[in-house]
Image 1 (cartoon, rainbow, N blue to C red):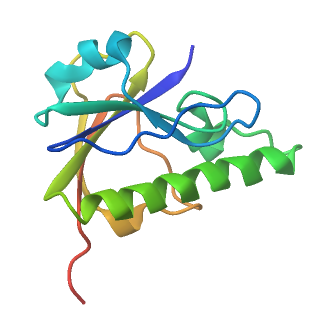
Image 2: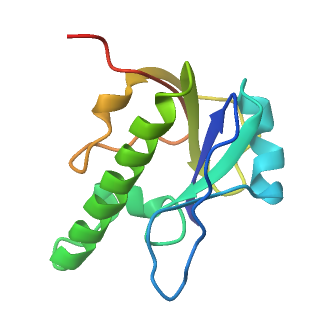
Image 3: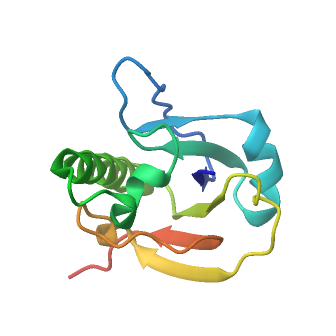
Length: 142
């Protein structure tokens, strides 16, 4: 079973296609899971967000095998790409929403509601718990 991650925005976001020949971070509109997860989101444009593993599992460093440092490096690269994407996207949006759950659990009730600044997304971050609805906002002015 895979972790899936969805991102919602008030306006369309750029899509980055999945390329199985060069697995990496990707963002795409998908009707299968996106239709089921819409009840968790308040924003209309919903996207599937995946890591180098194709799903959301590659965003969680705790899933990596410590005996394979290349797995940790790939996870950090996926998290870094996600962070850059979110930083760019939040500039033209008041907020974004992210929902993470196990594949097939998209319609189950939200268990965690979090509000985070976009700067908290980083290659060394701890990933969110399952069934977490995360509101992403711009960083507070320093």
